[in-house]
Image (cartoon, rainbow over all chains, first blue to last red; front, side, top):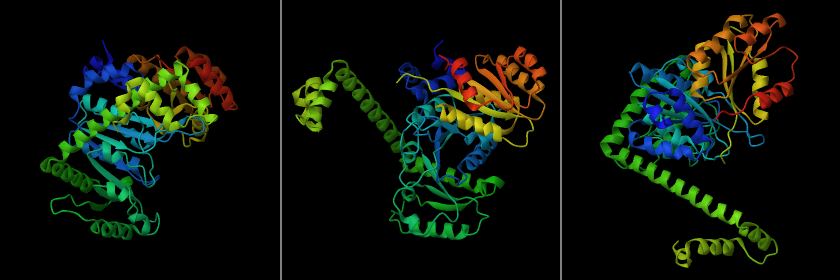
Length: 320
Length: 134
């Protein structure tokens, strides 16, 4: 039986193995995904992002519990950074989620970034799709601890929650582009700490300055204490409100379409590159180009044009 | 492109009060280029096995100081067998008397590292005995 068939049969090991194959870039995984793809597009994808130490994992743990309480099956994809020096990683998000380990309605997978920028791993979208096909009603993605520019999550998730904590920096931090633009909901976690109300107020003011149309979603700021399960119910209510807004406004359909378009583009890029690069590496052209650039007999622009022309015919080079 | 990254779960079953040793091992594994799923303190064997399966790890390293190794470590192997996941290598470390080691090995623990073992030795053992599956 193929991995995909076993997954549809409820085999957890097969699902875990396919996720590994996807993460390791096995070509065989593509064939399995072809079989699973028709069954995807049903799960609600919730993104949780924010700086390191904001309490993302604890919040994910509480949200998992809250959705389980509502009878939903929950998948969690938790991402931690890969060491740029050794290629190794410590994936520690499960520490906060252990109570769900033996709940058959929860599947948690830790992924390392493996050099991928943007706050997610290259495999995240595929792993989410596997969980979707497994029948998870909600898939929660926890990004790595982000700074100001790791915003891939907004292209992956239906609803994005940006988690912050009091006292991270002065007001200007909140105006910077990036995280402020991607949140559908903002959470100030560790709300028992000094300055929580001030942080929430500053965020709210910044959000009000955003130009929005009357029917647009108005991002809200909520206070939570994830470690004590405070504010979680309110957060889930707001998440569900946003989800309904997405459905009613037709935005959900657009997000899903954009996500599959992006997936297609990424795959196309990856495959085209592998195809062309593999070819010129084998036939020795790659080494020639490197040599010619070193002696300044050619430049990278001309070299790429030449190789594309040879591979796809002259007419294609001017297409862009 | 098609090369596996070794994944290892490091966990602490039972009631140990601290996890310094486990953290040192986890860092040594990271520095060796492995992906370490670290599950922290106070794990039941059920939680460890379930996490090992969901994370598709190649090995499970269990650190234990409390003296309950003779029941907790074999239980992990037993549960892995029940779930047909006994291709996952289990090894242990911590305060474990020499006399208990043969019994643990008979129960399916592949190796037991006692206090004083260098992290280099453990990483070397992993490289020799644990290969990414499939």
